[in-house]
Length: 418
Ligand SMILES: *Cc1c(COP(=O)(O)O)cnc(C)c1O
Image (cartoon, rainbow, N blue to C red):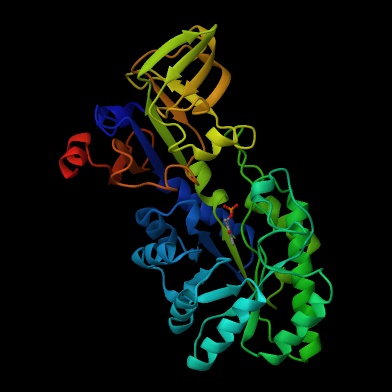
């Protein structure tokens, strides 16, 4: 923090910055590879952090890319991912999206039978494609604690509902008639889901793969894509659950994945990015209203969108720093019940509410932890977020190197363009 201030990473123009820890990212990717055997290939869910510079290093650390829109695909290409290392997932692929993928050997997960009809037509145009194609399955095993990130309920909008009516048998027939269907995908998780629940969904599609292959009499399904969804601990620095915890539960429930029979793909997003990023914002003013201490900063709903709108599901840990970059603690400061607010003009624009924090004063800084995924990277836009910058950091405590990923135009630059 001190270094960030001393090296002018935070200056008077930048009132909120995101910082990605590239060393931490490298360790996190290594932990994922260490936890699972060699037949696993880890892709990164681009929506969790769609910055080209971040994606480029994730590629260098050995990951592929999972994308869900043409924009994300373009970003992944700019970050240098090979087509064969990209998976296109989206419940709303246009004919053009599908053609782009099939023509360019990009893997796809089919969401529904109408999409299958389109893919079938395109397979006639491009019979020699190397795209790995299969269905996204909804194992319909139930949801977790956060309904908006639960993807495997009976009525989820995602995937082919396996347990409805005669769907299972129909799917087996569909695979039997189409030798180019060689994979199965599920993403039965995300924040709020227990590991056992995720493992259950993966067990369901692994059994399905076996049933399809047995029915056909050869191993047509060669790839199982188990999605992402490993939850992140936002309450402390501890990485729980770890990739190793998840691997252990998965191995117990679905040992077949830990043999060499299938190529297994993962699509982790939050578990890779969240704990390797922070947002730092300056306290502009403080006030006392109705007995509560309020610190007004420059990072609110425009960056902490989930937290501002669903504070109970997405609480964030914050730490206060002095203007010189020194952490404020109970030893050095009076502790008061504090709300940290953002700059947007609605009352719910709060980073945290009723927190016991060393008293913040103007020109202090607030660090929001574990925000490297789905926060500053989500909707970063050059011109609509003036005075926000994104940096990477690497090196040890004594010698930190910051490098600018993106720095928004200054207010004057934006004004000049208007
Ligand atoms: C969002 C998403 C992911 C990543 O989810 P995390 O909870 O960030 O790991 C993976 N796969 C698909 C299909 C997704 O939509």
